[in-house]
Image (cartoon, rainbow, N blue to C red; front, side, top):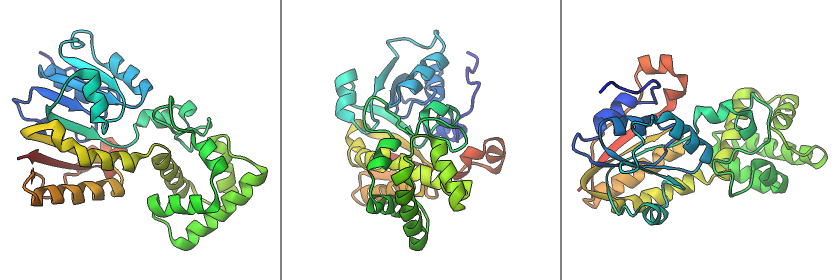
Length: 293
């Protein structure tokens, strides 16, 4: 069988090597465009694909060629990779042999102006993965107090306290007369304040993490995924944000001390220099692999 992959996700070779040859039931907890799932299917594995974003699920269905989309070998669930009770109810699958989660934002989100993730493209200030629930950033920002903005940036942005205090005050003052409805409403304000695009991208990232409860969701996954994995099988986590990687490192060390896990990556795996040259978005990726005892 020829290899159907025409797009290479971050750390793709490392993910392929991390999945045991005899792993039968695989959970791709962040389906995205379905490239990992496509490879799993090409290896004749049975796949459970999960994603909160209906648009990404639609993209994944397009990616997976009809010869691989066999209802007996793939199930796709709209929901959170951390909500195992929902996944079990939807699929009837109680445990799997291998779990992969590739956490973060997909580049497709930045390209689609209507989703509001990018500072480059003007569009509604939304940033939700699941547009069927939660509230868009514009609504959260309209209601946010000075303290809300400070708390958000302290938690998710690597800025000094003085800089955070200044940004929060300026944003609160600005939105009184000029509410933020679009991404360029914020960008124009930032330009007037002398905030460069690099810092504005960090601010956008902080809002995105909060509006999607990304770290809370990851914490919930780390607390519950042990029971969803069969003994002596593996979990692979790829993170892009220091807060996520720190949480993974602490949780896994704790589980290892309890003799629940064997950590297979003594040192975190990072993309090669060659991969980063091809895909700049890979530069902050970190992969951790572990096996359930």
